[in-house]
Image (cartoon, rainbow, N blue to C red; front, side, top):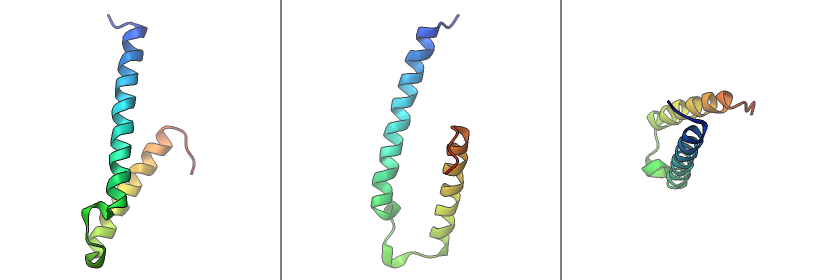
Length: 66
């Protein structure tokens, strides 16, 4: 049977992993997600639109209305 301390420890582990992934996304965004800025095309825009939609869904899940 799982106990509250087990849930808290798992929550902290997952939260730390999420924070690391957010930092990785920040670094990738600063580097244009690995794309040459002079070679950006509408496919890249579509990729970012999909990412933006997914991030909006995550923010909605956690109660952000921004």
